[in-house]
Length: 278
Image 1: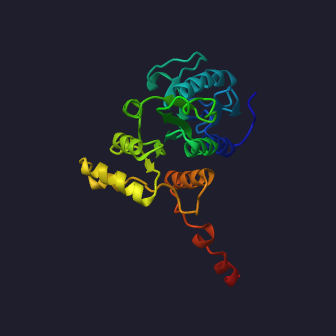
Image 2: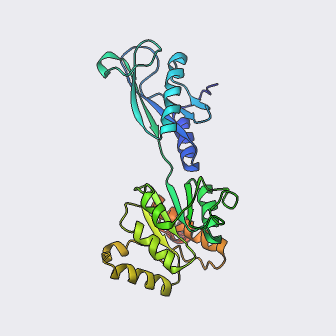
Image 3: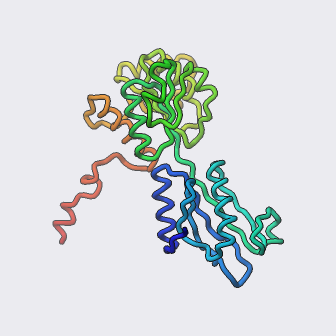
């Protein structure tokens, strides 16, 4: 059943669902050459479980469009679709159809956690909580399994080099390297350092991180590429335990993803300045 709400409420619900990592599509009417419904700019949100929010004012047309939206969610692809005056969907040219809608699907960012130890497990859990599609990779099946990593969307038990060569890394991918040793760190970093990933971070003390990065540099990787690696990984919050380190890592990733500064809010906008001027 479609709930009657304002367009702003539909948009807000869509953005909230995207932030949570829900499968959802936003439908917006971009063309209507008739004098009837739906009005230009009308919006409706459709979730992958079939739930809807908003209305296009034309129940028959909504059914067709909702089915197209579900298909777009499944394929993770946004598209424009035109419809004729009848309720039967067709992919005719824009000149032969009075209605056109844009179905927008926002794919959640992917968090690729390389290493399924204690820290990797906590990073995966927090990453899922804040809306990422989480993938965990480790070459040890006893660590990389769904029983140990119930929060991950995908668990890969495979050789690091093979898996990273095959993995589809793009500008929507955030990579965290938290393997069991510097050899595995170096191997993994070599396979992702020149990728288009939005974020590459590697765990380790300053000494360990410097040693790994020096070996990568000596192998011919440009200094400009090495400078993009966040290592030691995470924000400086005094983290010590695996749980605290995971919070530090996810905080830095969110800062990179959302465009934050990492500054304390109390310093970014000091309340004392407002108090003094009131």
